[in-house]
Image (cartoon, rainbow, N blue to C red; front, side):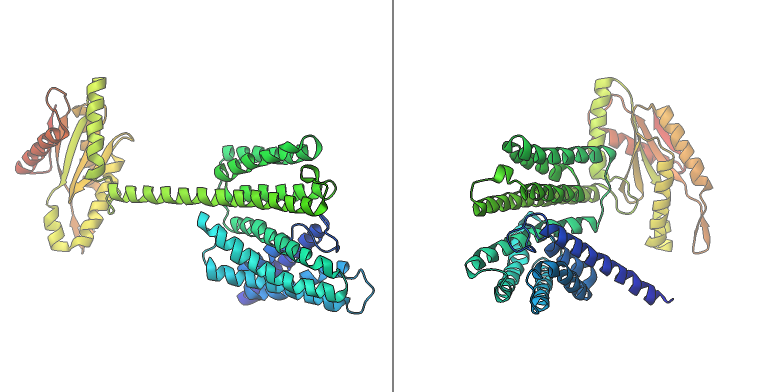
Amino acid sequence: MSDVGWVFRYRLLWLIAGAAVYYISARLSMSTFSLGPENLALVWFPAGIGLAMIKFFGWRALPFIFIASYTANLPGMSIFDSATNYTHTGISAAANTFESALAYYLLCRVLPDGMRRFADILPFLVIVCLIPTAINASLLVPNLLWGGYIELADAKWLWMMLVLTNSLGILIVYPLISAFSRIEPMYVGQMARCFSLFIICMGLVYLAFTLFSGFIFLLFPALLFLAVQGRRGTAYVALTLTVCMVVALASHDPGPFATGDITETRLMLLTFLYTIAILVLGSELHQRELMSTTSAKERWRYKANHDPLTGLGNRLLFMPLLDNEMKRAERMERPFSLALIDIDNFKQINDKYGHMPGDEILKAFSTLLLGSLRDIDVAARMGGDEFAVLFPEAAATDAESALKRLREELEKLDITVQGTPIKLTISVGLVEFHPDRFDSADCLLSQVDHLLYDAKRQGRDRIHAQH
C-alpha cells in the first residue's frame, strides 16, 4: 500500500475515534443532569470535542460530527412515536455540527495561535464559546418547539440553558485537548504533588455533598494551586474530572447548591462551574505567560553575557565574577589565579585565509580550552583572539600545569585550511592573586596583560607566570 493510502487510513481511524468519543461524551452528558428533555445535559462536553476535532482534522471532521451527534440524539428525540423524529434529529445534529464549525472559524479569526495569554480568555469566552452556542440554541429551540418536545413557555429558559451548558463544554474540553496535543515532561515530585492535589479535589467534592457543604469552596485554592504548580494537562484533567463529579452528584442531590427552587439551583451550580473553569484557565494562562516572560529574559541575559561564536562568557560576564572572586579570596584567605591567553599570529591567519576559517579555529580552541579546565574554572572570550581564565582556589603552579596541558593538546590539534596545515601556539600571562598586591580587578588584569605582552615580545608560544 502506498504512503498516501496509509495516511488516509490513519486519519480515518482517528476521525472514527473522535466521533466515538463525541458520541460517548454526549450519552454521558445526557445522563448526568437532565433538564427536562432527555437529551439535554447540564454540561455539553461534545461542543468542545467537536471544536477540537475540526482543529486537528480540518473540515473533513464535519460529517463525523454530524453522524455522532445524530446517533447520540436519536434515542432522546424518539420519545414520541412520530415520523418526523428523524427530521428533528437531523436538524439538531446539523445545528450541533454548525456550532462546532462556527466556533472553529471564529477561533481562527480571533485567536489564530490559540489561548496563550490571560487576556485571551474574554474573547475566547464571548466569541468562541457564547456566539456559536447562542446561534445553535436559536436553531435547536424552534426545532424542539416544532416537534412538540417542549412548551412555548419553556423556550426562553431552555435557550439560555443551552447557551450556558454548551459554552461550558467548550470552555472545559477545548483547553484540555489542546494541552495534551503538546505533552510537557514532569518530574517525579511534581507528579506526586499534582496527584495529591487531584485526590484532595475529589475528596472535597465528596465531603461537600455528604458531610458539610462548605467544603465545596475549598476547591478554589486547591485547583488554583494545581494550575500554578502543575502542568497544563494535569490542571485541566483535574478541572474536567472535578466538574464531572460535581455534576454527577448534583444530578441525584443538589447538595451545597440546593436552594429550594430548581431553576435557582441549576443557575447556582452553573455559576460555580463557570467560576472554577475560568479560575483554572486564567491561573494557568497567567502562570504560563509569566514563565514565558522569565524564559525570554533569561535567554536575552544569556545572549548578552556570552560570546555567540564560542559559547564562552564574555567580558560583561567575566568582570563581575572576577570582582567576586577577589572579595572571596580576601575573606577566605585562599589564592586564586588569573590567566590571559592569546592565539599567536591569529590576525595573519585571518588576513590570509578569511574570517570563516578563523571562526572555526576559535571554536576549536574554545572546545580544547574547556576540556583542559576543571568544572569550577571559568573561561571567557575577552575579544578577538584573547581569552581569560579564572582558576578559583588555585595557586599559579596549579594553573600553570593546566595551561601546559592545554599547550600540549594544542600541538596535537590537526587543522588544515585550504589544503595548508596550520599549527597553533598560544602566549599566556598568568598571575597568582594576593590581596596586598592588587586592590582592584583592573589592576590585576593590567598585570596579567603585561605578562602576556612580555610572552609575545620574547618569541610567543610560552607562559609567563607571576607567583
